Image (cartoon, rainbow, N blue to C red; front, side, top):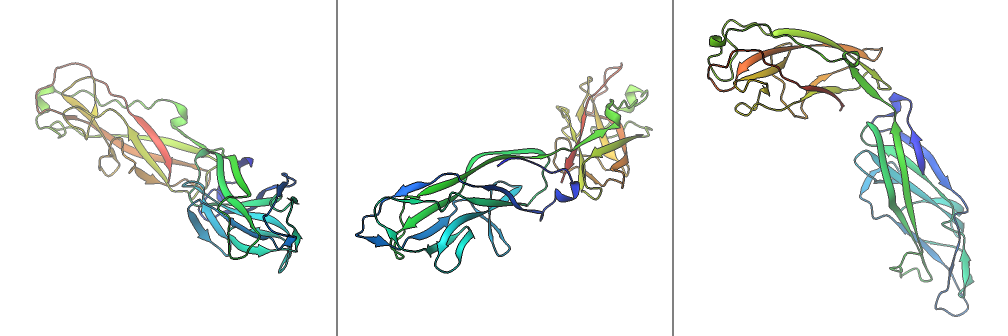
Length: 299
């Protein structure tokens, strides 16, 4: 199939179809000899071993979590429809009489595929040599061979050039201020008299739908004694990051803070941060620091 690049962010959403996105022609012929006298009426059948996807009048099959494929196979001189591109699956489509010995078939040598997005892509999705259909020929309408006359395989890459940049690509530094060590009293609690620090940052995304549902999550090392806080250089102190209402964000979780972009594909978010005791012990006096990574995920 090659490489399909989706440049319009409005197309990168569930329910988008790409009709006849790829076709093949003159892919080759094959010779079949049937154990019969004289001549016979060939019957064609095509199936797919992939899991079935949605059906809009034509059956699609699941390539992966993001993509479904519908395959049409070229059939010559069928008795009911003439020469046609027939969508898979089909059963026992007959054509005109042919000789039993050594007939060269062109049917199956041409065809096309259509794609359907079931879940938006992020970045790039690669699939290699996936069998999307098998093509069978039989001399008897009541019997189907277990051996396919031809298999149709698909390889390709779906690319959606898109990315988001947080804080113009520079590190966010949040100064939590000076705290008296004896104010760290209860495990998991703010120091006495401490006011959480609010910080703002911008996010700019490229090639995303402005109405796309996005999520901000945190990747960090949890504190050993308090997994809901981020570890710091002081084993008795951890860091909590929360939304602007003060609800802590879970560390290393797929369930992040949901947000949307403005019409110019940007937004500004506000978070809060505060230190907390991870052990309930009096921490060693001195500077401490902590590192976390902010991630933007396309939901």
